[in-house]
Length: 222
Image (cartoon, rainbow, N blue to C red; front, side):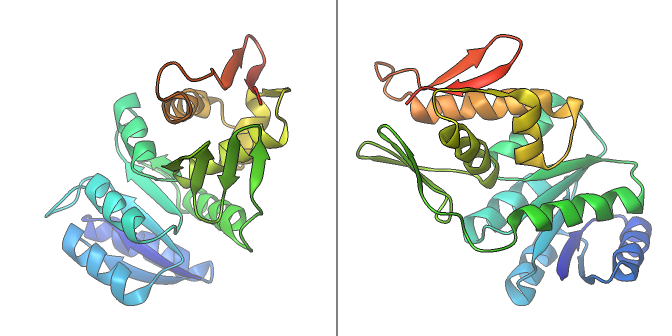
C-alpha cells in the first residue's frame, strides 16, 4: 500500500514515515505543495496524508488539486480544530482529519480504516424516488440534474437512500461515513447534511428531501 505523506516539518515527516513503513506501507514523501502534487502524479498513491500548512500552497489547495484528478482517500493533518477548517476540508473532498499532536499508532489506525472503507469494487447505483446515486462516479442525479459529490457525501447519501423513509440515527451515520464512533464528528455530520441539502433542494421550490429527526438523526423522504 502506497501512502503519499506531505508535511513541511522534516522531523515529523521522518518519524511518521518510519512508523508507516514499520506498519508495512510504502511511503512517498513531499515537503511542499509543488512536491506533493508532483509525487502524486508520478507515484499514483493509494492514499494521501496532507498537512494544512505547506510552502507554495496550502494543504487545502493540494486537497482540491488531488480531488480534481482522483478519488483516492485523503486525510488532512492540522494543528487547529476550528470548525471552519474542518468544514473547508470536507467541502474540498477530504475523507478524514487528524489534529496534531497525534500518535503514529492513531494515524496508522485512521489510514487503515480509510483504506478498508474505500477498497473493493464500487457499489451499485441506488435510487429513491427521483434521486439516483452513482457511488462509483460520485454523481447524484436529481431528475435531469446531475451533482458531483465528495466521497463522504456519497457514503452518507448511500445509507440514507438504502433506508429511505426511515429515520437513521446519527450514530449509525457516523459509523458508516467515518468508520468509527466519534462524538466530535457530529458537527461534521451536520455540515455534511447541510451541503447535501444545498445540492438536493436547488432550486428552492424543490421538495425538502432530507429531514432532521429530533433526538434521532436524519431521514430521506423518497
